[in-house]
Length: 379
Image 1 (tube, rainbow, N blue to C red):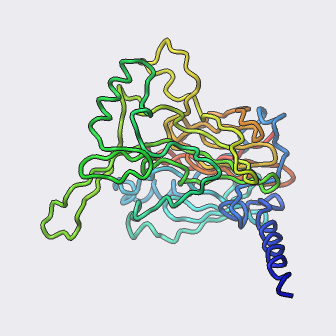
Image 2 (cartoon, helix red, strand yellow; image 1 turned 180 degrees about the vertical axis):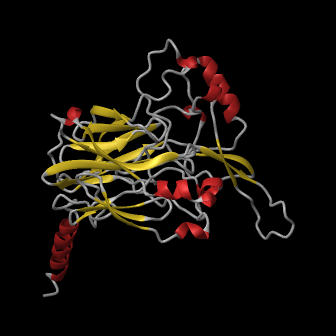
């Protein structure tokens, strides 16, 4: 019997793994990633490559936080109650759409009409603004699939659109300590690439359990870290890291594109299938006029991905505020929709009364834009 145990165990693991990676079921979106395997995949195909250009706004839901902001003097007058962006990923369970708000409220919504069914306010905001950006790590990576972003920073990575821009980039670069992957930071200013806000570590990827393909959005953000002794003589720290942004010549990125992109991997073979930039990037910058440049990808943090039977939906940057729709087999951008507010969230999809909806959060940010959910559907 012992000769068959490994085979039996492997078979059981294979079956359980297959059951865990089925994508969102029954036209719902019951967990953050769509299912227990966090695939962010839905087999719904009512919205497809043939009709995606006909999508229109089905409804918009205004956050129940708006009433709090209008009627609460403390919230109105304190800047600490401003939000970075409305980033919630709603859930659709048993025919009801559920969401949270930036101030910690919970709301139930009719998924077909966007009408608020009920809301609950646990008054979490009375405890003050939560702390963010604590300890974090980007972990390890295998040798396959291949890297999809450049790690580390060398002179070969600097922009070279024109000789003048190249010279300016070298002048900036020479002021910092840097090197290829695994170069340790040194006392003084260090270039970190990807930076604290870059890579693919924010929203994660989407996985198709039918084809075993992984779709990874990423942003090639870079930043600097200053390593210096603490100012206080009572501190027991040997270094005091300070993180800052790093701009290149004339406000352009310091390094070569792509700046944001989508990459598809065949996880059976560990190979890249395709990669495409997300957005045009700074092609209209005055220093680049007269140059014939291909799309470079927007130098912005992307939204979260949503994968369906044939399509991939993703926010193209929280300053660009566009929803892009791509053919998941080829990476071709099929359509995009300009949105009326900051878009930095992960969309979901579900069926309600026989109709497929795409729903996502909008708004928030330093400008105090109204926070809402928006639904798209075919007419």
